[in-house]
Image (cartoon, rainbow, N blue to C red; front, side, top):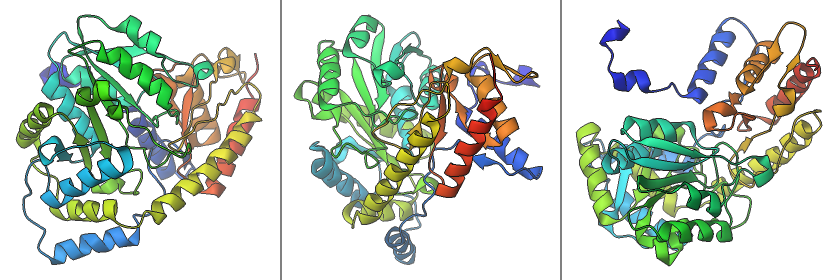
Length: 399
């Protein structure tokens, strides 16, 4: 029956994070004690005051269709948030609310890209970026950076990759999968490169903004020379532990926002009403639950760095945001336990899952063939046990 499937769907890869999560569930169903560190999902419940806002909205009749770009209450709250937290100025006609930031990214790609266009993706990158670009008929151009660069692409690399086919530059900061955070000066250098090219726009995914250990998040759209060339993507999943609420948004030039509204209007229309009212409340309410969550993640990060750094052959840097560790495991390539040989990161992750019962995600899915991603959005006990298990399986691998 595969012959009846479209070329489009057959070209589309399955999300590596979702695939690994599925494999972990299958092993659990077989009775194995699997620790899953594969998904980027906070292990915290949505704060009570946000849930109460949703209940109030339901009782208040927010159960109907919503405007495609979002309820006015939420768009106003997003405008205030952008100004308060990011020093970004947007009008109502520049905000589009979607069913998660993933849909926001799809809207952008499908609205701006044509066959033959190219999108420069700063790697390591979130697995969905390249697939959304391909879905839109364009070609992802992957710019790689390793642990020696703290997993951050330089402005010089970007300049050298730009050509007449380049339409977008896409990246996240804080970054999924690395946790790296681009500094003010690094972002300014990237902005200066893009500003020199009239028809190139920036897609800045800032969904991990509130899980930032540097003290101050910097939005690339604040630089005057790219203010009108930047599409800022954000959402509620990470900073407010609202993954299941499916609520994301963009702040964009008016013509881009209008195109995304048109696109979304034919796919899903507006996001659900009571989630939007809860989101509006979340942006304007007490941020202490988010601050507390960030503090826990920071503690976990330090614990994971300390534990993983003690495993011989594993290189670990110090990510400044999100809730991921992205070790370089290239020294394990060519090793064997006598039965299994580790040739690449895919082999390593499969080995860790089968032998150690810890689910992690191969770096090849993120444009980093020498690495793997660990999400530390799990309990301290699970994280400590995962370090123990990974250390044990690694000790079996010899040259």
